[in-house]
Image (cartoon, rainbow, N blue to C red; front, side, top):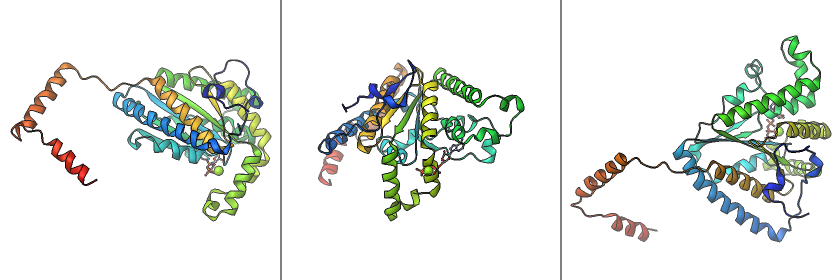
Length: 310
Ligand code: ATP
Ligand code: MG
C-alpha cells in the first residue's frame, strides 16, 4: 500500500462513500517511523503558530470531531494534538452516554453547549455523531420519550432526518464563522483485539478496559454500516470527513496533525493590525518606559544574565 496523503483520506460528499475503499493500515516500515514523527513535530509547530494568530484574531472557531471504535486511539491523539496548542485557546469535551437531563433535550443541545468561542479550538472526543452511530446500532431511538409523529417513522427515515439535521447544523456553524473538521480513526477489528489484550495484560492500562467493550466489538459489522452511512450522508465540501488509517498510531497521528494544520491554514488567521492611534500610543508608552532609566535600554543586560544562568 502506498503512503496516503491527507487528500486521499478526505471524503467531501462527492460520489458514494464506501468504507472498503479506505484502508486501516498502510504498513509503513518501522525504520520510517522517525521520519513521520519528525513530520508530525513540524506540523505541531505550524499548528502552534497558527493557533496563536487564530486566538489573537478571534474571527473563526474550529471544531475538531474525533470518532472511532474503542481503542482506536482517540485519547492519545487528543493528548498529542494538545501538546502543540496553547491550552488557553482550546477546550476538550467528551461525549459519553447522555444524562437524563441531556436526553430530555434535542440531541444537538449538549454539543451546542460545548462549542468553543470563535478564535478557539474545540476538540470533541465523540460527538453528536454518536446519535447516528451507537443509537442506530442499538435502536436506542425506540426508547426515547418523543411524540408519535417523530417515532412513527421508519428507522431509515428517522436517521435520514438526523443526517440532514447534522448537515444543517454544520452549515449553520459554517455560516456563523466555524469550521468543522471530522476525523474517523479507522482501526481494524484485528488491531482492536490486540489493543484490548494489551489493556488486559498491562496493569497500567487495565482501567481503560471495560468488559462491555468486548460486547460492543461483537457488533462490529453493524457499527461499520452505521459509520459508512453516516459518513456518506454528512460529508460536505465545508465539513468533509477524513478517514484516517489508525492501525499504526504514529501514522494516524501524523495524518491528524496534517488535517489540523490544514484546517488552521484554511482559516488563514493574521495578528490584528494596530490602528494608527494605537501605534502612537505604543510609541508614547515606549518613550515613557525608557525615560525611567534615563533613556537607557537595559534589556541587553537582562538577556546576558539569562544566558549566563542558562
Ligand atoms: P475510552 O477510550 O476511555 O473507553 P470512550 O469514549 O469509549 O473512552 P466510555 O465512557 O468508555 O468513553 O464510553 C462512552 C460511551 O458513551 C460510548 O460507548 C458511546 O458510544 C456512548 N455514547 C456517547 N454518546 C451517546 C449517545 N448519544 N447515546 C448513547 N450512547 C452514547
Ligand atoms: Mg470506551
